[in-house]
Length: 130
Image (cartoon, one colour):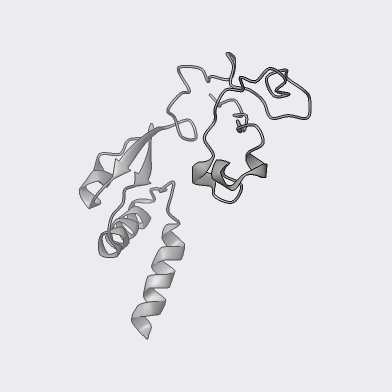
């Protein structure tokens, strides 16, 4: 169960104007090309792809992370609810709580998708020694 590779949908000529996201990714919003002579609408080879039918992932793989169902971890108790079909994703938590979760995850040999537990614990130990 793997997902299809998603195309990088970009607005026409976003690279030419700052207001369309030349420098800032958050301003890059896709809009369908509507112009009469628009090369993206005409599907020229050198232009970015349009949003069309056929890019959607299958229903059974939609919403999965590395083939597993994601589960948001807010505290140490949430780690106990993880099953083999789940993958841990740490929520926006403070430093103290994050370190506690990382220690428990290392103890139980649970991989957290968006956190490198070894690196975090090593950094924390180094800071405590000083």
